[in-house]
Amino acid sequence: MAPYTAAFNGFLWNEICPTNELTDPRMKPRIRLETIVGSVMLLPLAGARSFLNIDLLLRGDAGRYFDESVSDTHLIRVIRELSMDELRKINRRVFEKDPSTYRLESGRELRVGLVDGTSLNKQLMSAFQAVRNDANRTLVDFEPSHGTGHELKTSATLIERNVQKGSSYQWDLIGADGLYMTRHHFNQCLNFGVDFFVKSKEEGLTIFQEARALFQRRHLYPKDIEFIEGVEEKRGISYQAFASSGFSFEGVERLLRVAMITETSIATGETEIFFIVTSRDDLTALELRELGHLRWSIENNGFKLFNSLSSSKHGYVKDEAASLRLVFILAIGFNSLLLFLHEKWNEIEKHWRKAKMTLRHLARHLLDQLLRSSRMIKAQV
Image (cartoon, rainbow, N blue to C red):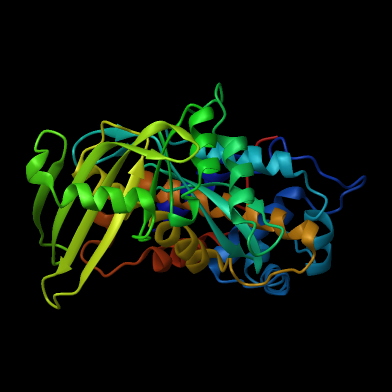
C-alpha cells in the first residue's frame, strides 16, 4: 500500500494544491497554512471527530507528517478568517480534475448535477453534487440555510452560482426530489439554459393525476405513450415504466415529459410507485427510471459517504463563520480522496485481490500510513 500512500501525497499537494491561491489571514504566521488546512482535510479522514482530536493527533504520530502541531483554538481562529470564495475555487478545482460525464445504461452521456438539503456540522445547508461515474460524485458547492423551510431558496442560490450560462462547465440536467416540484425551480433551470428532472411520490399533484389517467388508456394512444416492463434481477424487482410528453405545469411555458414507474419486490410483493417529470423530451422511460434512482446519489454517495469518511454531520464547531469554511475544507479532502481512488481503483483492487474491502476501511488504511510518514508534505509555492 506504500506506493499508493506516496502517490496520494503527491496527488494532493502537487496536483490539487489545496493551499495554492489561498490567502493566509495572519500578518506573521508561525505555523504553516499547509498544516492548518491539511490537518483539517486529512485527520477527519483518519478518524478525528473534533478540533480537539485534530490537536491531539498533531501532538502524536501525525506530527511527524506535518512536522509541527497546532492547537484547536488556533485552528478555529485561522479557519474562520479564510476566504469563502477561495475555498470554493479550490474545491471546484478538484471537481474540474475529472472531465468525464455520466453514462446511462442506454449509452447516452449526460452532465448531471443534483441539489438537496442536509445538515453538515449540525448546520442546515444545501449541497450541489456532480455525478460523473459510479465512484466519483463530487460535492461541488454548499450554501448555508437560514433555517427549516428555506431549502428551496438556499438551493436556488446554489444553482445560480453553478449553472449560469457561459460558466466553465455546462450542465445537461439538474436533478432533485419532490420538494422541488415548483415553477420557480423549473423556470430557474430553464432560464439558465439547463434541463431538469424531479422525482416525486406525490400522486395527488395534477400533472401526475393527468399522466396516470393517460397511461391507463395507453391502448388508445399507442404512438404517444411509451411502455416497457421487465425484471431487474440484481435488485430482485419487476417493473413497469410509462412515459409521455406534452404535459403542462402552471407557470411554466415549456411542455413537460412525465414517467410513471411501478416497481414490485419479487420476494415480498411490495409495490412502489414514483413519478419523474423532466423538461427533456428525448429521454426514454427506462432512462427516466434510471435517473429516478440516480436521484438518491446525493444522499448515499454524497451525504452518507461524506459523513462516513469525514464525520461531516458531527458538530466540530459552533462558530458560524468557521462552520461553513470547515465544511469546504472537509469536502476538499473528501473529494480529493474519491478522485484519487477512482483513478487508482483497478490497481488497488489487484493489490487487495479478493480481500473484503470497504471505501471507509481503505481510506483509514491509506491515511494511517500517510500520517505515520515523516515530513511527506511537498507543497508547491
